[in-house]
Length: 108
Image (tube, rainbow, N blue to C red; front, side, top):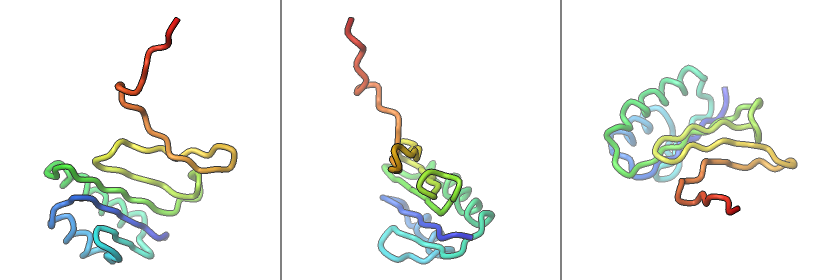
């Protein structure tokens, strides 16, 4: 069991109340669980994923210790572009796909 952190942005009181009932709110929109099992973490994420369809301009990020991942942590995201953690030259970086607006065709 590892520390789990959930950070929310512009979520409804329904989600805030649910998270506050299962985790400690250490700052507005920041929730921690010192010893959440994988099963409990997955159930919390399942509820958040199910309820997220009703949110407008909101975001939720969940992260926890995962020794097999770069940087030793796993990240799940709702409402923002998906992120991948990669390790490059000993530094952990986040990677996400660029929107098509930012991709320019190669000139010949």
